[in-house]
Length: 421
Image 1: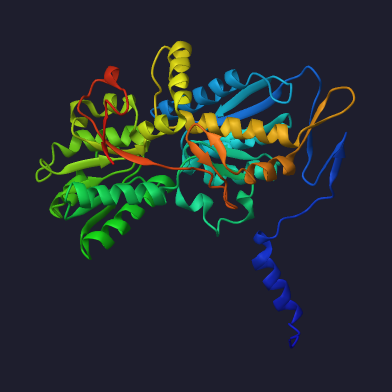
Image 2: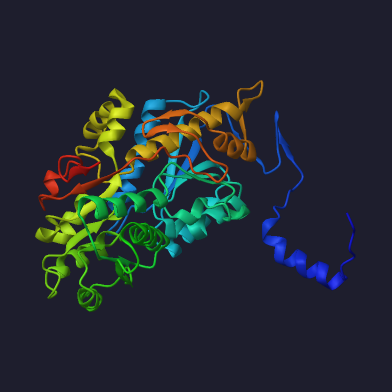
């Protein structure tokens, strides 16, 4: 091969461009019996292993985070001890927005006692937050981030400590499009997103798949709102002019409630079908949308398939949940959070080492590598194997329809009723 000498200035420029793709490797640290290139967490005998969550636990989308946190708490109850140590759960509210994700991740990154994190809920939190955690050596496993870009091959090394047990919206968007075309016989589709990575990417996947199925021109509107908008009539009026058969709006609870209520008030949309996704799959959406939620379709994880896969495990989980919290799960990702916690516990037991005094040492990079090496893990959500980019899910997506607007009747599979597949 012929070697070409590059001008020094050009070489410097190329290095600067490529800089984000090089991961700095500090000298390996040795603490007790463990050497790790990122760092080592020491847990003294008699002290707990600290695990953190960063989830949305306040505001209109709190049901999503509370649902996930409860999944983690039940996993801790079931596991009891990890490598002979108790587990302490601490956490931060991440707000379901980029700013909240940065704030939560920054606080967790400053706490050197944390071994691993579980979160976030919303993809908009993870995009800026996951790199902050990984810079501090904290691996995180998300139970409900679904944006396609988070585990894309070009995601870059900043996300080297990020994994998820949730599905990618490349799966959910395909199911939404196929259901619309094959079952609802939709000819013309409109979409609405709120600018978040989750909503925009999911809406685009569904629209692109639907366009391939139904032909060019079948997607008649791709509109955007703000998550804080309350008057959806202007965008709905614009969509009405395109005369769609179905509006797909994978947004969150507050905005989803306004869209659902106001669509019934816009001329030309009286008979147009409405479909949302897992971001509004909660009894809180019934409160937000009122009577207008009756007849609305949802895409979300197939909890019936999950129960069938898990056998008695999921049924036992639901019994424990009812006893512990006095109600049914609030959203669709409690089992994914349970699996995220159990994956982390298993990885800790794999890489943790004890000294003669009974103290536990966990290498941060070793823990990360053990999680990425997860293969055929028997989780409550399926048989989990992690890809090199952090996709660990064994996903099955269903479509549901709401036949009631009463939050007290919330019982996924029954109300809302699973209708596909």
